[in-house]
Image 1 (cartoon, one colour):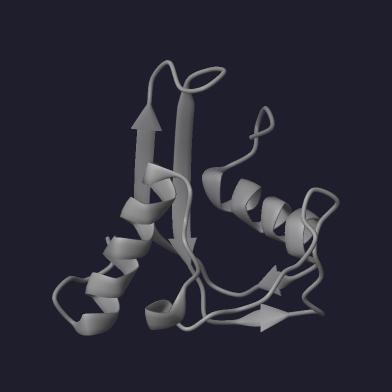
Image 2 (spheres, helix red, strand yellow; image 1 turned 90 degrees about the horizontal axis):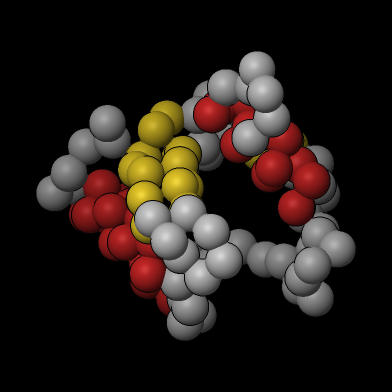
Length: 99
């Protein structure tokens, strides 16, 4: 997050930098906080969007980028990411609403 940048602006910028995509409306999904993580404190905000523009490409730190159905995801390494995916799966199943 850059100084003076909102969480939503950060999400839009990071999405574009990492995937080449733009997005429409963003709805807050969840946040994850892990003080004293691997190298530093960690704070992640996640958002939902269903409106994309552009061509999906892998960023400079990835060899591939693609979309997966929520029920066919590859293994996810980080606990924060797994928790956010589980929340999204609960929303898709109708057992929870976005914040």
